[in-house]
Image 1 (cartoon, rainbow, N blue to C red):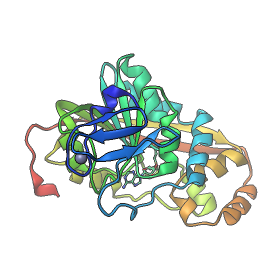
Image 2 (cartoon, rainbow, N blue to C red; image 1 turned 90 degrees about the horizontal axis):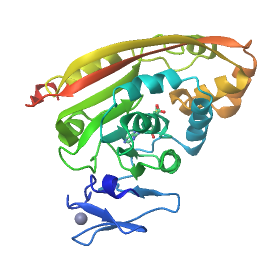
Image 3 (cartoon, protein in one colour; image 1 turned 180 degrees about the horizontal axis):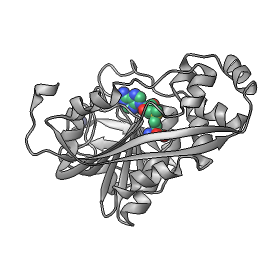
Length: 283
Ligand SMILES: C[S@@+](CC[C@H](N)C(=O)[O-])C[C@H]1O[C@@H](n2cnc3c(N)ncnc32)[C@H](O)[C@@H]1O
Ligand SMILES: [Zn+2]
């Protein structure tokens, strides 16, 4: 656990500041949280456990695919928005690949918190970069991060809680959101009968951020990648379709595809400034 990053966290039970003694994270009112052998801490609060997050298999598939370099341009686009920042919070951090790239770009004194509800993801993010502190929490319940404490929040293919993101950002802080367009991986969607990106997603994103954030920049990133069977299996296995199709069924469908298969990567990267005042009209 990085002390500078732990200093950004807050106790999920009482809201007090937290510190780490190496094996535990604790608040001064006596609440303690064990640091897992694999280097992450769980700050789940309340009823926890309703939202499961990505499985071990999905995280392994994500790691395999991201290590292949196919999304490096997406990581660079996100990292570009983190130059000269000190503190970065990645909500739904997954394997930590994007946060690691962002910290490399942010500079040697930067620290990052990778937050994910999945323990499998938290385990992987904990070893993605020496300056990542990996935390298990449910973003829909509570983000255990101090108010007005982080410079940049990342949301990459992940759920967003606009009210909590606004609360934890410093005045002047920024939110970086990467969302897929309806062209993203469309060839695989068609070939394999996968879950489609909701066409209203971009509009809904604008709706949920309205009143709390002002868009500064929006960049479309679109390029082709060429995939073999293993990469197709990995990119499908790390996504929502993995929950709807059995592994055997998927493997059969993937093996039947002619490869290499050219596939479109198509996302939007939005950079939003935190608005000073909040209007809750868009809740
Ligand atoms: C599609 S993955 C994206 C992971 C990573 N940002 C990336 O692009 O490689 C979404 C991530 O959000 C996490 N997640 C889902 N619901 C969550 C919640 N309620 N709170 C925190 N994380 C959540 C999942 O476990 C998963 O790791
Ligand atoms: Zn406490």
